[in-house]
Image (tube, rainbow, N blue to C red; front, side, top):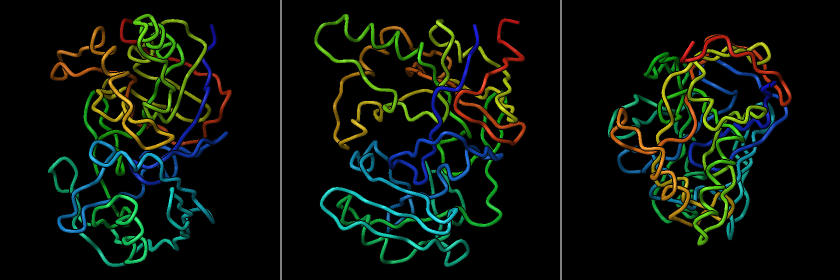
Amino acid sequence: MTITVHRLTYYPVKGCAGTTVDSAHVLGTGLEHDRTFMVVDAADGAFRSQRTHPAMAAVRVGVLDGGAALGLSAEDVEPLRLDVDPDGPRREVSMFDRPLGEAVDQGDEIAAWFSDVLGAKSRLVRVAPGFDRDGWGDTPGKVNFADAHAVLIASTASLDDLNSRITARGDAKAVPMDRFRPNIVLTGDDEPHFEDRVRRMAIGSVELAHSVRATRCAVPMVDQATGHRAGPEPIRTLSTYRREPEYGNKVSFGAKNAVVREGVVSVGDAVEVTEWLDA
């Protein structure tokens, strides 16, 4: 059975809506433009996420002019075009109480815009030139402002299995894939969570290697179209069969990978698995 790429998505601003594309350049830190920007607390530089600000999900971000500008829109506010400052004033930022160093502040206009949308004083920052951050796991790799890894992979088989379990309960509806915010969605293998067992794969001209399973917090309970919490699914059902003792008994869905060869990947590309966990 041939495994192929079903969907490709990058997320220009961490925590905000993604952009689905037919083809993407994959750099050492993941899909080009993925999580290059981050919203932070204006006071202390701590990152903002859907965990505490679910409205971020409904902020639409378009990468314009090859990354020289962003177009942003959200409900009840005027759209904004931001001319990106790639190397301007710096601001110390952090994620999960860990300092990341300096990032490039994108100015007062976009800061006021995000503060209005989120109801909390915020700044928008960009990775600074020379930003160098390690991931962790079997193959650590490099990462921008994603939580800790370059590429998140999920499969249609995993979602189909989850949704069959959710709907069998009789009191909840199936959830869409966007709840899990993957970069690459694979299809063609009927085994749920086969992506967990893939240790190395080639897609297009790209090669990826397994880092860790993707453990989940409250974000999958946020409706990605509206920016409103819509739990308890899918976390409630995942907790019945996807607990991970190795990762603090959290639930998991998807696998995080490092980029070991840069290149281009496209929807429809065949996936060559070159190493399996049980090989």
